[in-house]
Image (cartoon, rainbow, N blue to C red):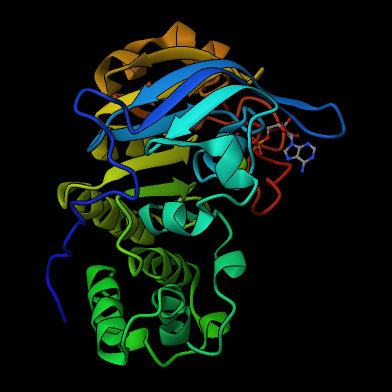
Length: 295
Ligand SMILES: Nc1ncnc2c1ncn2[C@@H]1O[C@H](COP(=O)(O)OP(=O)(O)O)[C@@H](O)[C@H]1O
Ligand SMILES: [Mg+2]
């Protein structure tokens, strides 16, 4: 079991000094149903940055991560990532090389975990690379160790807890030793202790020198995992881009972006719920008790 992971020095395409890893110019994405998800996005992300994409539900965070991961190309504008044109990557060009360097952890771990055991899922990527058995095993040990789940290697993913599944899903991406890790709502629907474990693991991923891009709408985790925050409006536009302290102190901005409600009370960076009115469905879990009307 390896304690700290090695981050690859060489990218699939050399990105020149002073060049961003991701360069988005006037990017739009419209779904076939004509649903506009992103509009006029200009964004540059540099190697080693830890960026949070902060936005309410439906603001385009997952769409933006799919674009950064080269799963789809933009419907407007252009994206260059790691020296490649993302539209070409999405069309199949250099996809293999690209996906060794950029890995996306989906919000739903059940999409990522499809094998009989956790180890099989973590080994899947390295096996695709045509590595030797020993090299595959080494990468699996490293990824499982980094997520602290070596003891879960032989378990079936479907019988794991929510937090364990998340860690397995991240390990299945880390085993490719990507330079960039994209995480979609990594702490959504986790209990507080498990959420803290995930935050700690994400901090370690960043400390190991990787570029991290994390989509979330949870304000309390932002200062812990980010050195930069990009705020998306509900119309899929970048409305702010700055240091966590500055963004989180801008109450007007957070209200406009539907990240806090004016009736929610704040304690520092942590928004604290106070049941003034029924929720508009932004929480996916249990229904609110109807008696919760005390202010
Ligand atoms: N497969 C899809 N087909 C049509 N519209 C979609 C699809 N996926 C997302 N959208 C729409 O695109 C917008 C952005 O969605 P998404 O990127 O999932 O936002 P977020 O991750 O911030 O919640 C929303 O209005 C959503 O309804
Ligand atoms: Mg999403």
